[in-house]
Length: 267
Image (cartoon, rainbow, N blue to C red; front, side, top):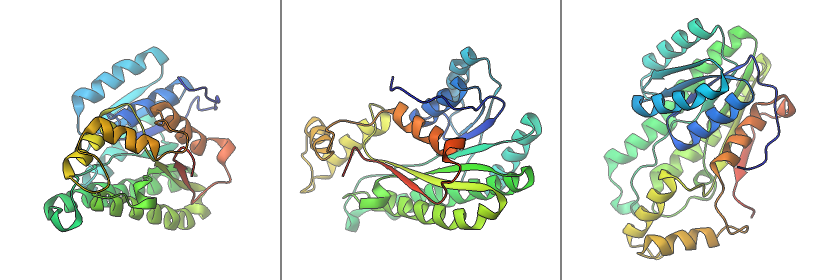
Protein backbone atom coordinates (compact mmCIF):
# COMPACT_ATOMS: atom_id res chain seq x y z
CA UNK A 1 0.00 0.00 0.00
CA UNK A 2 1.36 3.40 -1.00
CA UNK A 3 1.79 5.88 1.85
CA UNK A 4 -0.95 8.48 1.77
CA UNK A 5 -1.85 11.79 3.29
CA UNK A 6 -4.94 11.86 5.47
CA UNK A 7 -7.68 14.24 4.35
CA UNK A 8 -10.77 15.38 6.22
CA UNK A 9 -13.66 13.74 4.38
CA UNK A 10 -15.70 12.74 7.44
CA UNK A 11 -19.32 13.74 6.96
CA UNK A 12 -18.80 14.25 3.22
CA UNK A 13 -20.13 12.10 0.38
CA UNK A 14 -18.48 11.02 -2.86
CA UNK A 15 -20.29 9.63 -5.89
CA UNK A 16 -18.15 7.33 -8.07
CA UNK A 17 -19.19 6.20 -11.54
CA UNK A 18 -17.55 3.01 -12.71
CA UNK A 19 -17.56 2.14 -9.02
CA UNK A 20 -17.25 -1.61 -9.58
CA UNK A 21 -14.01 -1.38 -11.59
CA UNK A 22 -10.47 -1.55 -10.26
CA UNK A 23 -9.95 2.22 -10.00
CA UNK A 24 -13.48 2.87 -8.74
CA UNK A 25 -13.06 0.27 -6.02
CA UNK A 26 -9.67 1.60 -4.91
CA UNK A 27 -11.02 5.15 -4.79
CA UNK A 28 -14.09 4.10 -2.80
CA UNK A 29 -11.83 2.44 -0.25
CA UNK A 30 -9.56 5.49 -0.12
CA UNK A 31 -12.41 7.89 0.66
CA UNK A 32 -14.16 5.51 3.05
CA UNK A 33 -10.92 5.20 5.02
CA UNK A 34 -11.05 8.97 5.58
CA UNK A 35 -14.68 8.89 6.65
CA UNK A 36 -16.61 9.79 3.50
CA UNK A 37 -19.92 8.20 2.61
CA UNK A 38 -19.78 6.46 -0.77
CA UNK A 39 -22.27 6.20 -3.64
CA UNK A 40 -21.37 3.71 -6.36
CA UNK A 41 -22.73 3.77 -9.92
CA UNK A 42 -22.03 0.98 -12.37
CA UNK A 43 -23.72 -1.48 -14.72
CA UNK A 44 -22.21 -4.49 -12.93
CA UNK A 45 -24.45 -4.99 -9.90
CA UNK A 46 -22.66 -8.14 -8.72
CA UNK A 47 -19.30 -6.41 -8.53
CA UNK A 48 -20.85 -3.36 -6.89
CA UNK A 49 -22.21 -5.66 -4.22
CA UNK A 50 -18.68 -6.96 -3.62
CA UNK A 51 -17.34 -3.43 -3.22
CA UNK A 52 -20.20 -2.50 -0.91
CA UNK A 53 -19.40 -5.51 1.26
CA UNK A 54 -15.71 -4.56 1.38
CA UNK A 55 -16.61 -1.04 2.55
CA UNK A 56 -18.56 -2.30 5.56
CA UNK A 57 -15.36 -2.38 7.62
CA UNK A 58 -15.16 1.42 7.48
CA UNK A 59 -18.57 1.90 9.14
CA UNK A 60 -19.66 4.57 6.66
CA UNK A 61 -22.92 4.85 4.70
CA UNK A 62 -22.79 3.23 1.25
CA UNK A 63 -25.31 3.16 -1.59
CA UNK A 64 -25.09 1.55 -5.00
CA UNK A 65 -27.14 2.18 -8.14
CA UNK A 66 -27.19 0.45 -11.48
CA UNK A 67 -26.78 3.29 -13.95
CA UNK A 68 -25.97 3.58 -17.64
CA UNK A 69 -24.09 6.87 -18.00
CA UNK A 70 -24.90 7.06 -21.73
CA UNK A 71 -28.58 7.62 -20.84
CA UNK A 72 -29.08 11.19 -19.63
CA UNK A 73 -32.45 10.54 -17.99
CA UNK A 74 -31.04 7.57 -16.10
CA UNK A 75 -28.14 9.67 -14.81
CA UNK A 76 -30.46 12.48 -13.72
CA UNK A 77 -32.81 10.06 -11.94
CA UNK A 78 -29.92 8.35 -10.18
CA UNK A 79 -28.51 11.66 -8.92
CA UNK A 80 -31.94 12.63 -7.62
CA UNK A 81 -32.33 9.30 -5.81
CA UNK A 82 -28.83 9.53 -4.34
CA UNK A 83 -29.35 13.07 -3.09
CA UNK A 84 -32.72 12.15 -1.62
CA UNK A 85 -31.15 9.35 0.41
CA UNK A 86 -27.85 11.05 1.35
CA UNK A 87 -29.00 14.64 1.59
CA UNK A 88 -26.12 15.97 -0.51
CA UNK A 89 -23.15 14.95 -2.61
CA UNK A 90 -19.87 16.81 -2.15
CA UNK A 91 -17.55 15.09 -4.62
CA UNK A 92 -18.05 13.35 -7.96
CA UNK A 93 -15.46 11.04 -9.48
CA UNK A 94 -16.56 10.86 -13.13
CA UNK A 95 -14.77 7.58 -13.76
CA UNK A 96 -16.95 5.27 -15.89
CA UNK A 97 -15.33 4.39 -19.20
CA UNK A 98 -14.83 1.90 -22.00
CA UNK A 99 -11.39 1.18 -23.47
CA UNK A 100 -12.61 -0.18 -26.78
CA UNK A 101 -10.90 -2.53 -29.20
CA UNK A 102 -7.31 -2.14 -30.39
CA UNK A 103 -6.87 -1.77 -34.14
CA UNK A 104 -5.08 0.33 -36.73
CA UNK A 105 -6.93 3.46 -37.78
CA UNK A 106 -7.99 2.20 -41.22
CA UNK A 107 -9.28 -1.05 -39.68
CA UNK A 108 -11.01 0.36 -36.60
CA UNK A 109 -14.69 -0.73 -36.43
CA UNK A 110 -17.08 2.21 -36.60
CA UNK A 111 -19.58 0.67 -34.17
CA UNK A 112 -16.90 0.35 -31.50
CA UNK A 113 -15.68 3.90 -32.12
CA UNK A 114 -19.22 5.11 -31.45
CA UNK A 115 -19.50 3.03 -28.28
CA UNK A 116 -16.26 4.50 -26.92
CA UNK A 117 -17.39 8.05 -27.65
CA UNK A 118 -20.87 7.43 -26.22
CA UNK A 119 -19.41 6.14 -22.95
CA UNK A 120 -16.27 8.23 -22.49
CA UNK A 121 -17.46 11.57 -23.88
CA UNK A 122 -21.25 11.66 -23.89
CA UNK A 123 -21.44 9.69 -20.63
CA UNK A 124 -18.89 11.95 -18.96
CA UNK A 125 -20.91 14.98 -20.08
CA UNK A 126 -24.15 13.52 -18.69
CA UNK A 127 -22.57 12.93 -15.28
CA UNK A 128 -20.78 16.28 -15.31
CA UNK A 129 -24.01 18.14 -16.11
CA UNK A 130 -26.02 16.35 -13.41
CA UNK A 131 -23.21 16.88 -10.90
CA UNK A 132 -22.93 20.58 -11.72
CA UNK A 133 -26.68 21.11 -11.37
CA UNK A 134 -26.64 19.50 -7.94
CA UNK A 135 -23.49 21.25 -6.71
CA UNK A 136 -24.81 24.66 -7.78
CA UNK A 137 -27.83 24.12 -5.56
CA UNK A 138 -25.78 22.86 -2.61
CA UNK A 139 -23.15 25.60 -2.70
CA UNK A 140 -20.22 23.98 -4.47
CA UNK A 141 -17.96 20.96 -4.45
CA UNK A 142 -15.37 19.16 -6.56
CA UNK A 143 -15.48 16.99 -9.67
CA UNK A 144 -12.66 14.86 -11.05
CA UNK A 145 -13.06 13.55 -14.59
CA UNK A 146 -11.15 10.43 -15.56
CA UNK A 147 -9.05 11.24 -18.60
CA UNK A 148 -5.94 9.28 -19.59
CA UNK A 149 -2.38 9.74 -20.76
CA UNK A 150 -3.82 8.41 -24.04
CA UNK A 151 -5.52 11.81 -24.24
CA UNK A 152 -2.14 13.53 -24.07
CA UNK A 153 0.12 11.48 -26.34
CA UNK A 154 -2.20 9.47 -28.62
CA UNK A 155 -0.83 5.91 -28.42
CA UNK A 156 -1.00 3.65 -31.50
CA UNK A 157 -3.97 1.38 -32.19
CA UNK A 158 -6.30 3.25 -29.79
CA UNK A 159 -7.82 5.97 -31.96
CA UNK A 160 -11.27 5.91 -30.35
CA UNK A 161 -9.98 5.83 -26.78
CA UNK A 162 -7.41 8.54 -27.48
CA UNK A 163 -10.03 10.77 -29.12
CA UNK A 164 -12.38 10.29 -26.18
CA UNK A 165 -9.76 11.18 -23.59
CA UNK A 166 -8.49 14.22 -25.48
CA UNK A 167 -12.14 15.30 -25.38
CA UNK A 168 -12.40 14.74 -21.62
CA UNK A 169 -9.44 17.04 -21.03
CA UNK A 170 -11.09 19.74 -23.15
CA UNK A 171 -14.42 19.21 -21.40
CA UNK A 172 -12.67 19.63 -18.07
CA UNK A 173 -10.99 22.89 -19.02
CA UNK A 174 -14.22 24.45 -20.29
CA UNK A 175 -16.35 23.21 -17.39
CA UNK A 176 -13.81 24.52 -14.88
CA UNK A 177 -14.24 28.03 -16.29
CA UNK A 178 -18.03 27.77 -16.50
CA UNK A 179 -18.48 26.41 -12.99
CA UNK A 180 -15.83 28.32 -11.02
CA UNK A 181 -18.27 31.17 -10.17
CA UNK A 182 -20.40 28.60 -8.33
CA UNK A 183 -17.51 27.30 -6.19
CA UNK A 184 -17.32 24.08 -8.20
CA UNK A 185 -13.83 22.86 -9.03
CA UNK A 186 -13.38 20.57 -12.04
CA UNK A 187 -10.12 18.73 -12.69
CA UNK A 188 -8.99 15.73 -14.72
CA UNK A 189 -6.73 12.82 -13.94
CA UNK A 190 -4.63 11.18 -16.67
CA UNK A 191 -3.02 7.91 -15.57
CA UNK A 192 -0.60 6.18 -17.91
CA UNK A 193 0.19 2.53 -17.17
CA UNK A 194 -1.62 1.42 -14.02
CA UNK A 195 -1.68 -2.12 -12.71
CA UNK A 196 -1.88 -4.88 -12.03
CA UNK A 197 -5.51 -5.27 -13.00
CA UNK A 198 -7.92 -6.17 -15.73
CA UNK A 199 -7.32 -3.09 -17.90
CA UNK A 200 -3.53 -3.47 -17.80
CA UNK A 201 -3.70 -7.15 -18.76
CA UNK A 202 -6.27 -6.47 -21.47
CA UNK A 203 -4.22 -3.63 -22.93
CA UNK A 204 -1.03 -5.66 -23.28
CA UNK A 205 -2.89 -8.59 -24.80
CA UNK A 206 -4.74 -6.47 -27.33
CA UNK A 207 -1.69 -4.43 -28.33
CA UNK A 208 0.16 -7.70 -28.94
CA UNK A 209 -2.68 -8.92 -31.12
CA UNK A 210 -2.70 -5.93 -33.48
CA UNK A 211 0.57 -6.81 -35.15
CA UNK A 212 1.89 -3.26 -35.43
CA UNK A 213 5.48 -2.04 -35.66
CA UNK A 214 5.27 -0.61 -32.16
CA UNK A 215 4.82 -3.73 -30.07
CA UNK A 216 5.79 -7.38 -30.00
CA UNK A 217 3.26 -10.16 -30.60
CA UNK A 218 3.95 -11.66 -27.15
CA UNK A 219 1.91 -9.92 -24.40
CA UNK A 220 4.68 -10.53 -21.85
CA UNK A 221 7.17 -8.75 -24.09
CA UNK A 222 4.64 -5.96 -24.64
CA UNK A 223 4.36 -5.52 -20.86
CA UNK A 224 8.09 -4.93 -20.63
CA UNK A 225 8.12 -2.64 -23.67
CA UNK A 226 5.46 -0.46 -22.07
CA UNK A 227 7.12 -0.40 -18.66
CA UNK A 228 10.47 0.47 -20.26
CA UNK A 229 8.85 3.54 -21.83
CA UNK A 230 8.23 4.95 -18.33
CA UNK A 231 11.20 6.78 -16.78
CA UNK A 232 10.60 5.18 -13.36
CA UNK A 233 10.40 1.73 -15.00
CA UNK A 234 7.34 0.56 -13.10
CA UNK A 235 3.56 0.54 -13.21
CA UNK A 236 1.59 3.08 -11.27
CA UNK A 237 -0.63 1.51 -8.61
CA UNK A 238 -4.36 1.70 -8.09
CA UNK A 239 -3.67 3.24 -4.70
CA UNK A 240 -1.64 6.01 -6.33
CA UNK A 241 -4.57 6.83 -8.60
CA UNK A 242 -6.97 6.90 -5.64
CA UNK A 243 -4.58 9.09 -3.64
CA UNK A 244 -4.43 11.55 -6.54
CA UNK A 245 -8.22 11.72 -6.72
CA UNK A 246 -8.32 12.36 -2.98
CA UNK A 247 -5.81 15.20 -3.28
CA UNK A 248 -7.75 16.88 -6.10
CA UNK A 249 -10.95 16.68 -4.04
CA UNK A 250 -9.34 17.89 -0.81
CA UNK A 251 -9.13 21.34 0.76
CA UNK A 252 -5.38 21.25 0.06
CA UNK A 253 -6.28 21.58 -3.65
CA UNK A 254 -8.90 24.28 -3.14
CA UNK A 255 -7.19 26.64 -5.58
CA UNK A 256 -6.82 24.05 -8.33
CA UNK A 257 -9.36 23.87 -11.15
CA UNK A 258 -9.12 23.14 -14.88
CA UNK A 259 -6.00 21.06 -14.21
CA UNK A 260 -5.06 17.74 -15.82
CA UNK A 261 -2.92 15.73 -13.42
CA UNK A 262 -0.76 13.30 -15.42
CA UNK A 263 0.37 10.11 -13.66
CA UNK A 264 3.11 9.00 -16.03
CA UNK A 265 6.12 8.04 -13.94
CA UNK A 266 8.03 11.01 -15.29
CA UNK A 267 8.71 12.46 -18.73
